[in-house]
Structures are given as C-alpha cells and as structure tokens.
Image (cartoon, rainbow, N blue to C red; front, top):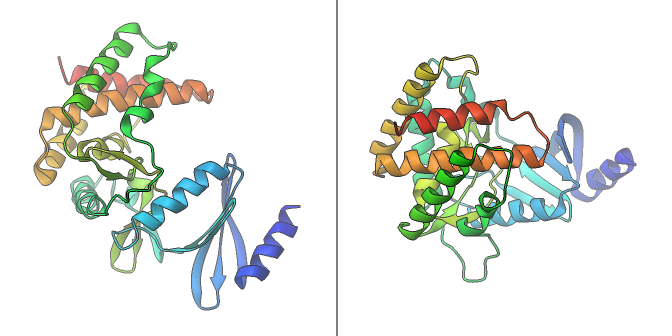
Length: 269
C-alpha cells in the first residue's frame, strides 16, 4: 500500500530517487528530487495537523521558513534544505551562537502578517490542557495556571508563532538558516523563546548546572529580543508543565519534563 501511494505521488509530482529519511509516529519522511530540485516528501496520517502546518508555511512564506512546493490531503512537498545541518550541531560548544541564530529567525518570523481569515488557534486555546487534572504535583499545576492567566492578561500584541521552535527545527540552507515544521498559533512573541531555551539540555546535569545553562540562555534571549527576562522565565515554566501534560496524554516517559519543570521552578526561588 505504501509503495503504491509513493508511486502515485512520484508520478503526480514528477519525483525521483525517493529515499526514506525517518518515520515518527504517523509521519513518514522521504528525500528525493523534483527534476533538479532537492525535495522532502512528508506523508502523514494526521491530516488535520498537516493541513495546519501547510497553512503555517504559506503564512510564513518569505519570512524564513522552508519553501512549500505543494500540498494535498495528508501530503506535503517541501524544498529540501542543503546541506541540511541541524542547529543542534552547535551544542554545546557554540550554544551562544545558536541562540543568536534563533533570535534573528524569531524576529523575522514574527513580521509575517496575520490574515483576517486565518484558522490558527490562539495561546488561550493552546493552554487549555493545564485546566485538567494530571499526575503532576499540584503545586506545579497551580503555579502554571496562575502564571498562564497573568501572562495572557498582560500579553504584548499578538503575532503568528511557530509554536515549537527548537534546535532540530532550524536547518542550514546554503549559507543561511531556515525554519521547518511550524505549528502555527497566535500569541505574544515572548512565548516563542521557551521551546528553544529548553532544548537541548544534557539529561545527566546536576540541577544547579542545568539552571545555570538555562539562566544564560534566558539572559541572552531577553537582551536580543528586548523582552523582560522574568516573562521568559514564566513562559518557560508554563511550557514545561504543558509539555508534561502532553507526555502523559501520549504515554511518553515523563522524567525529562519533571527535570525541566524543576529547573524552571528553581529559577524563581
């Protein structure tokens, strides 16, 4: 069945040399060529998620994202970044340089206009899972809810956000860096930074060492983006608890998210 679908897509889009790259959950990635154009083909069973990614790529077009070549239900055809080096390759030796790259891209992304007829969720919707009861310490849940409410009530002007901008979603294309895999949501710019700040982070670091790395990242981002440092700290805590709820929902190992939440909680002590 998979081979037949690939045959049809190859015929419809004039694709050759399709090679599997990875398969994660419901998503399958292939590299290949469209005439002389290097491409990535993304096939997904999560059709609604893929449709929103396509909409986000269109909305961000010209503002630092990978080029969307074609979209149909369950399928994305993308320009392939060459050489395609991930920004994660900068960690840990060039972590400061990686932050500078990310902040430059964030500024560019947030210049994309928000259309009146968009269908992207806003942050308030995105954060609804925090209102449910989870197997998470109650003090963490309460703190995340309180901070969320305060941050939403005092938000800066909304922009179109990537929603999951970390080191693995920034790739080298020629001599530049571009962004892939946007989620697409509407919210204040400070929210964007948290995913990058918490990734990557060595799992075996002592808590105090991890806090220092995170502290340095937040300080640099606050300076480069001209965002209050405490606002970034607060969003980082909210996002770490939110990611913990997602991990529980999907039955993932939650130890990483426990560690992250403890780090951001300690920054307020």
